[in-house]
Image (tube, rainbow over all chains, first blue to last red; front, side, top):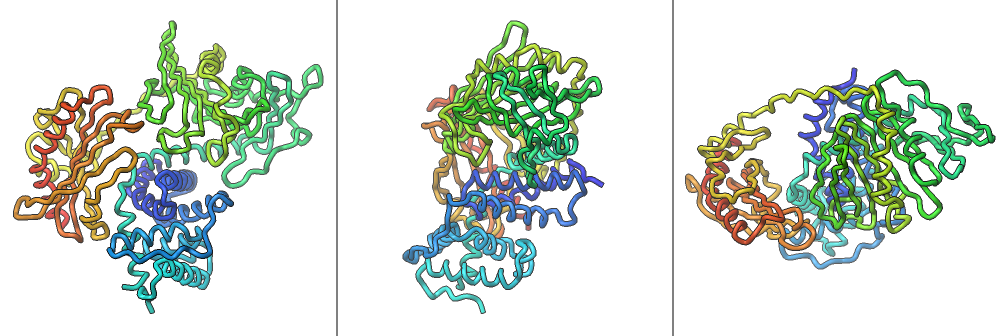
Length: 165
Length: 430
């Protein structure tokens, strides 16, 4: 049985802030993040009213968002390309500046690598959960995560930030 | 600290630095969801049939219908279309629309009418459906050989607000009332309302609202799709006057004859949560609890504001440790909003309170939206801060240095109450 539009509104109001923050981390652009979340909510709305309220609507919406993001990036084709070698940047002296540098470096990663890091370190998803959301194997997620973190470390030009065991 | 921990902190700080535009997101999401539904319904209704339209110049056009988000089958060849007919001269013509039950707007007839009223051009990518019996939307690509244009519109018995919005993107909006009482809203300029977003993507759009409630909207862009395409021409192919001639044509009254406007929906009372009551109580006399942890200032509170200045609702949010006070208080300017550094003071019970002000820019396109000033008061420990904020706004036409000073004075007078509310908010949250 289809879910109610009222129920969807309540859900969308409660989750859109979180979705927008995730979209912001993925796109780094206010308008693109807005587009991405609205596209996502539109797809969730359609599923919700055509079929039924998803069992875990927040997870459903998050999965829709990251997959939509990857699809959009793929469609953008050659307009944006991640660089193989990110420029080395002097390690900033303050925590705030260091974080800004990390966010900038994140934005230059391949879209899928970026999604992996955002899911793992902002959404607190496990490797297995991340793999399920992206339709990848757990090994592929580990490998992407390892590679992406190494690239971030290279950007910072330091070995001090050692990975967790 | 490991890079993972550092990244985790960076992501949290970055994410919580921003205030998501929740209302816009939800409204936009529902709009897109409804559009997806309409496309789905239309696909079901039309199946694989294609409608052949004849443009004014007699060009035979095959319209591939309803290429949805889940992948359409692409253009349909004329020879494949069993519903295609020919006129006396052997030219393919549109298959006559199916007879519709009386009292409904026929989306196919709407597309036929629009195409017939526009100058000659090739029509492709046509899509149309109803939003219910009293409304139909459509879109297609029109191309006269000098640049494809995305054309879209809606015919509805649900009259929309015909007033002009505040335009800050360099475009224009004009509002006219015709002799028969029909109102016209004529807009042209950049498609997106924000001045810094794809200023070369331009659209001309006109909406006519008749005294009967019949609303006809028509828009044309200088690009073949709404998004993710390059402009094909400097300006949209039709002027506002050309579009006005289409939307005020007598055909719309004929196509909507017998269609009944919907009964107005009854408006329910918004839910007032207990947190809002606590916020209003903490702010003091004259404040009333509003929806979603807000409090509305009454006339007793807004005394002192210049006439015409609007005070918004005070709202309370809780911020976790991910966004430090230091980060919150960083001065910056973004999209016409200037955030000033915080000042620190001691609030009720010896609690440290951070007071921040933000104002809108007085120059440039964003200033056309009027002047706004905000007060943001933050209290509580780093791991669980409470922020209470309010905005007062004035129109671009009315704002003067004196009025702005009075607004700022009024906000300054609220600091004590807001510090009290923010401090009370910590106790509530705790």
